[in-house]
Length: 439
Image (cartoon, rainbow, N blue to C red; front, side, top):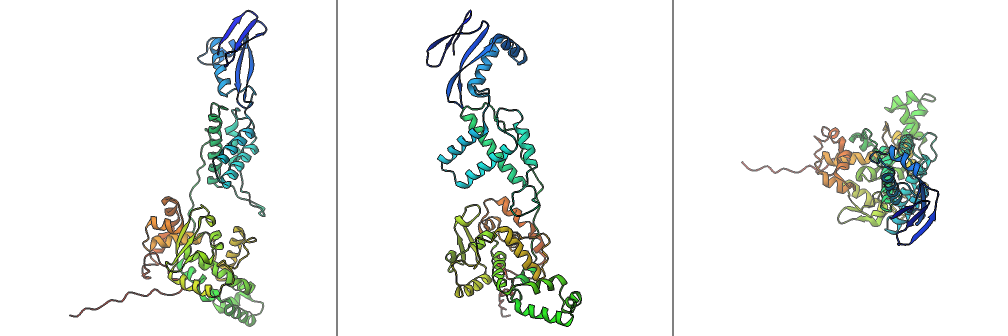
């Protein structure tokens, strides 16, 4: 870009090579610069006194001409734009449009919108502001989970915070590629790290109680509970002690509804034997069962990470599924109302089911069945890569984290003699016959 000083007359030459004379006050400069957001060339003027003052403040710029060159470069590249700021909403709109044209999924676009909302709620509007990173960091540190229906919501996980940071960094890199910014304001955001807490697993005794016939047909247990209460009217503790029950177990057994018990018994059986996520279990259909190969071939549409899963059908589960298949009335394995049953509701009903059958949740949820299955597979000798394939994990690190409770089953499985990767909660496995040779 050429400039010429002729007294009070300044000659400006744009990139097309057209000379444009313009009369300015003496001692000032005018530059023709590219405004990225406006997508056009605009004219900015700088007085010589301001040039010299700024030149003394900037390192490496001792004279006004050097400051002018530096200022011109900052304006041209977008660090100091002609519109004086780089709006987050406009850059976000451009980024979403670019991702949509590149064929990104709808879930990814929703994640971008959520990250932009987090930045907007943090008070970020101008990306050239030096306080952008501090505002976003403080807002993320105080961010709580959005769970409708809960009065008190816990803080979001470090994984959620880091997901927002990754998207905001990508938006900053996109603005730099479009020459809207010279530096990425989100590069200074450090990732959040929290201590990894391993979920507790269910014991083999608890699993046998949950999948037993007593749990499947609670009418007999309810009749026994009513007999105990009739023998000791008004004294729940004495009645429970007389029957070998706990007071809490006796109370929940009397409150159970016979119509829902069979459905939730099926739900617990599928979670305990397959280790699938609760939303995947609720979406299982009879068409996903490969009876010959004893596999559940689940498409990626109903899986959280959109990866198809080939879950193994345990021998005990195969006989139970065949019985259900003969009695089927719907296309889904579980006759549940999928529209009203959310993950929180499933956890709540499962907790009540555990208490009715004498299993204290103690902080364990439906997802702990998945950790239990991974630990059992590892304890019975299944390799990490095979466990990763059976449970639908995408990394060996995740599979190792889920199998953390395998050491708790080592002593319990020492006398069980389970084959590799097989569970027997309802009966003992057939022991191999040994042939005695002749002597």
